[in-house]
Length: 72
Image (spheres, helix red, strand yellow):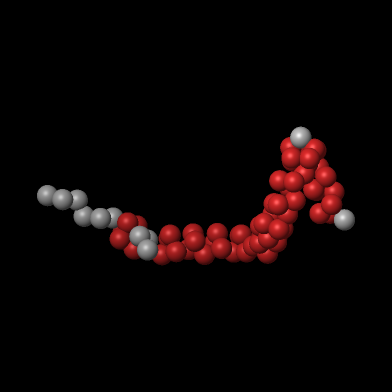
């Protein structure tokens, strides 16, 4: 004879994952705009990064120069 599902597995199967997704949305919502700007700037500055890597021959120096230029 198959076991009958418990109360929790019957009534929390759909609301609990939905509530978890909603809670994650509320947690990550303040970070959405800064992450979008970071992705946009990375997309725009990628060609300059490639040129600096070729010219300076050091990835870390290239990243430092790009960071200083992006901050000012």
